[in-house]
Image 1 (cartoon, rainbow, N blue to C red):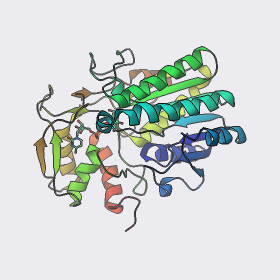
Image 2 (cartoon, rainbow, N blue to C red; image 1 turned 90 degrees about the vertical axis):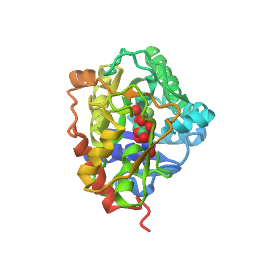
Image 3 (tube, rainbow, N blue to C red; image 1 turned 45 degrees about the vertical axis):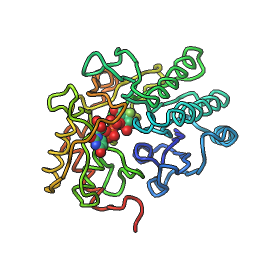
Image 4 (tube, rainbow, N blue to C red; image 1 turned 90 degrees about the horizontal axis):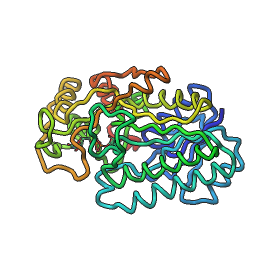
Length: 327
Ligand code: UFG
C-alpha cells in the first residue's frame, strides 16, 4: 500500500508517517514546512516540499504516483487563531482540502482519511461526546473541518471514494524522545506546561477559571499521538467495508489545573501558573466517547493515563529543549 500523507512533517502527521513505515507502507509526504519540520519526516518516506494550494502540483503528484490512500493532515489547526483570523481557516483549510479531493477523484485515489476535530462540537449536549452529537462547530477552524467532512460525505454518496474522518480530541505525547511536538509559536497546553517546568518559560497563564467545570478550568481529553496513528491504520484497513466517522479520545477528561498538577508530579518541577482571561472559542468541556471505534475496529489506547502521555512528552522536551532546531 502506498499512502500519501499531507502535512507529514507536522506533529500528528509525522507520527502517522512513522507508524505507516513501521507497518511497511510506502509513504509519500507533501508538506510546505510552514508548521512542520523536515527532520520530523521518517527517512524512509519520500518527501515533497510543496503547498496544497498549488493545484497543478497536487495533480502532478497524484497522477504520477501509484497511490492507494490519502491521509490529509495538512491544516491550520488553532482554535484561538481561527477566531482572530477566520478567513485563514475558511479559505485556506477549505481550499487545500478541495484541491486534494478534486485531484483524488480525478486520479482515482479512492481511499481518503481526514484529520478532523473535536471542535466540531462547540456546545455539546452530552458528555462524553459520541458520533450522534449535533455538529455545531465552536470556531472557524471547526467549521472548516465540517465543510470537508460534508464534501467527503457526498463523494462517498456518489461513489467517488471511501473515507474515514477521525475527530481527534487533544493530541498529546511524543512518539519517542526524538519525535515530538514542536510548534512555533507554541500555544498548546502540554508543551507550554513542560516549557515552564524546564525553565524555558517563567510561568504560564490558565485561560479562565470560571467555566462550568469542577475546578472552573477547561476540561479536555488527551490522546497520545501514537494511539491516534494506530487508529488511522485501523480505519484505513476497514475502508473497503465502507466509509466511517469516529470520535477519538481516551474518554477521560482532565482540567487545565489537573494537567499542571500531574505535570508537577511527572517532572518533579515547580510550574508557576496564574489565571488570566478565557481564550475565545474554547468550549468548557470536550471529552470523547470512543465506544464506536473501540467496538467496530477493536482500537484501544495504549497510553490511557495522563501520566503516560506527559512522561513521553517530557522525555522529548528534555532531549530536545529547542525542538527540531538543534541550537
Ligand atoms: N490553555 C491554557 N493555557 C495555555 C494554553 C492552553 O489554559 O497556555 C488551555 C486552553 O484554554 C484549553 C486547554 O488548555 O482549555 C487546551 O488548549 P490547547 O491549546 O492545548 O488545545 P485546544 O483544546 O484549544 O485545541 C486542540 C487542538 C485543536 C483541536 C482541539 C480538539 O489544537 O486543533 O484540541 O479538542 F481542535
